[in-house]
Length: 187
Picture 1 (cartoon, rainbow, N blue to C red):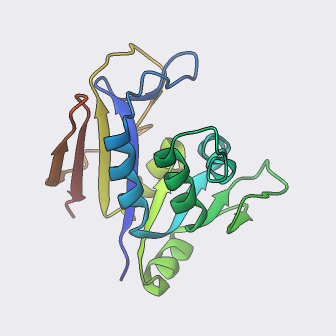
Picture 2: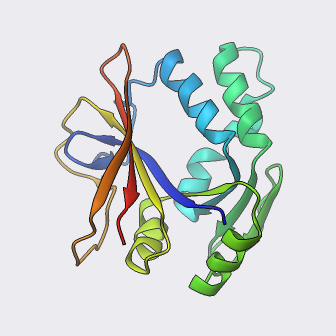
């Protein structure tokens, strides 16, 4: 059975974007990008909430953009080769490669996708991921911890009202100060 994995880039104080909705403080070097690209290849499907999908959709065109660095294009190609499900009640269509739109993905839907998928499944977007985390559907949590404090904005873990225990299973430090950590969700 495939694992459902929630991963994001976050500031040291736990925000995925600052009070202005920006994340240009991310410090994503080529080394970090290559690592993230490798991570992307382990996921056959990524499930997005609307806002995160709208942020990530640029990767569909960056794969072909000759004005950006090769490592940027390579990540775009990896993004294009991943099936994407966008969960949104407000969007009426999606036009990116290998993407389908649904208005809802229930716990039963997630269990079925996990049972049928030959590869792990990613979930991106803190609001959607929080719902799945509270329902006990997420198997792993990973964070690219950026050594910056932004003081406010959108939290990586939203509306979590119970203790969720994690066990660190991987850690990787990058030359630019970013640290990747992967945790198994303890049941």
